[in-house]
Image 1 (tube, rainbow, N blue to C red):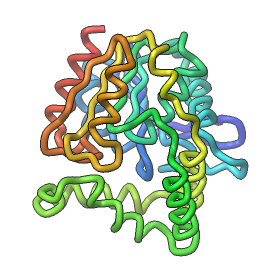
Image 2 (cartoon, rainbow, N blue to C red):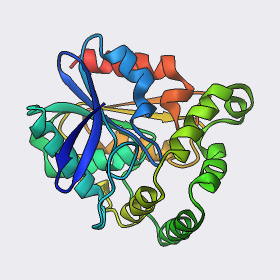
Image 3 (cartoon, one colour):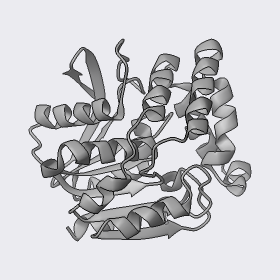
Length: 263
């Protein structure tokens, strides 16, 4: 793990392998270890950078409000610090929101996009209200309830009942998240821009991956992105929910590595 100063905080990241840079952004409420199974495969051919977004993992939490645009700016500054002018940028769930915010601000720095189990739309009013309630609960009680209540949305019932190591990894990531960081990210997601109009402006190859049983960002959200992004490929992974990269590792890795090697 390495750290770099971004504004007033230290941003933690792993940087391994060599070749064309690939930057992978984790979802909420996880950390960079979400991508460890992808890093293990990609580092054979690529330089893979996996940061902890601000407020998550070993990255620090700032006092000022967080936005998806601000998180995207963090990635641009990390690229500057690592002397990376352009990269393949990918993200899952909230990481995908940051990816879209990054492309909106820095399209010239993107070689290709990977959008996994994510969506372009902003939160509905109901969704914003739910995030506000979650924020209050987390600041009051910590992350335990989140680790319990989110699990059925993150994994299929079969994985929950038969894959204890996977369940533990996910719950460990959630329990390791700082409540202040989670609370700030919830408000950032609630206030994020609708990026639907941006989709038709994306002019780089784009891989879209989603779990067939994802209840948080359903398949139709990925189908919308595929229809609007001209140079896109949509892959629906069977027997996977929201954390498709961990639930169907081999399938996800095969699609991701093939996509990156063809660029």
